Image 1 (cartoon, rainbow, N blue to C red):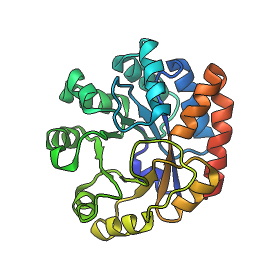
Image 2 (cartoon, one colour; image 1 turned 120 degrees about the vertical axis):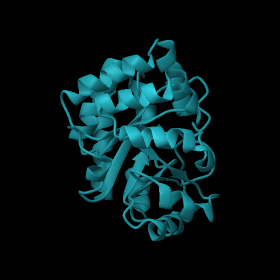
Image 3 (spheres, rainbow, N blue to C red; image 1 turned 60 degrees about the vertical axis):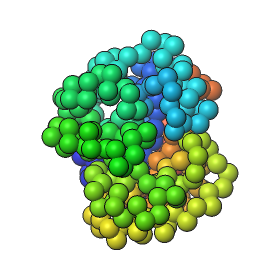
Length: 258
């Protein structure tokens, strides 16, 4: 039995690293998952590659292209997660796009997530107002459909947070994913509104966090932080030799936020 998303936030500030499954190959992705858990990750986001990842910046777009050109499929990724589940119960969530789920078959996709021990699903191209067709299927399958709020969400934050499941993904900056030298958004105001609407819902801040210092600043305003592009950059740089580099980086973030 895998741990839940709630378990990821039970031990203090949660660190949620992201990797694109299949970049550079699934064997390396699997090894990186184990290394990140050993380094102190609380929950791991696995990206299912898509040909048009609209929320992603150039770093993660390139990772999607590398994974797809390597021939990775959604079924391959499910099989990898099954192998991971034989060795660890760390909570895992998928981040992908509506078309990936539609193409697979929504009910079939969610059922498979449940079978392999995926705890949640993030679909950045599905707005809150259009989540209905996914939300009920996920709820019936025991999968948390994780909602996102952005600096432009304003009064919608209350509505989104009140119905959110798992954790609330708070986007720190406008635009696409990527590393940033300075985050100027008032993320504290965003998480405060969310907490007022849903006091028991954990919040995690992502987009643009690229160093232990920026992670520590963001963690002061939320229950956890999410880092993707900075990790994917290391994988792009070191390829199949990237595991120790990713492990050291994750460890540095975990130490900074706790």
